[in-house]
Length: 298
Image 1 (cartoon, rainbow, N blue to C red):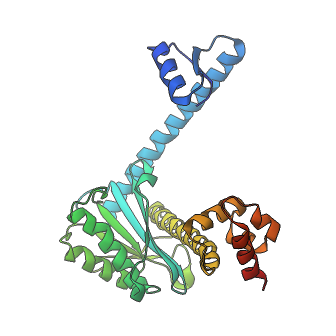
Image 2: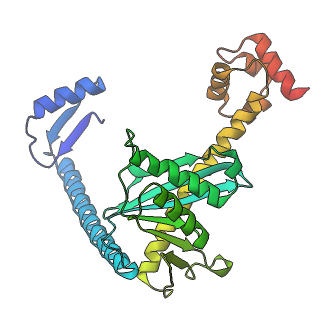
Image 3: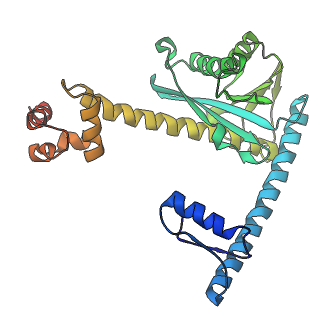
């Protein structure tokens, strides 16, 4: 929190707020109404920016509402899906497998509802159908069992893929008794061309004109799920890469690994460190430092 907060009007119970903020931040926090020319100009600029942001937010919300209504009409859904969940998987040759869930509503992407799932079942790693099945079962079984922290049910589920992914998804949700939650599968076009996607819903196949706003909307949802899945995969891959190098050295437990990574930033930097640099790390004794150095330089 800043030391000085300038407002465009008087604040109710200003003294109480100042005391509360100051105590929380352990420093003096002052709240004052703009008075000088510079303060008034800053306050006016902030007010102008706030109005523009509000106008854009209202426009986006209305635009999102229209797109959601059109989506419901196109696929003949029973209600406007004001809470949409989109799923995608990411892995490299079955390694560091991650499932991703993103959520979209009338106000746009709801990042508080984003979730990533590290694939636990080794037998399905690299198998898109198997991974999707595990992710959906883990996500929706929490709701059925009313586990603490479980997300509320969406009005629509979207999955990246074709008929196979649709069938697997429908099978999982039906098994959990969620027959009424609609599912749409988004299959990429030939040569993965954007604009040539095919949608599967129930027993029907849907295609769109390349300039259809609804197609752009669906692509935006699919692309955000893909982006989140890839970023989650890269994060896991990087973590495992840093972890695996140090895990191979006997005598380097969790605490020493933490000391090393906090000091050097990555396992690769530990590998290239000199013996003296290793000895300088807090919590790493000289004999352990030599053991680490010898492991990487023998």
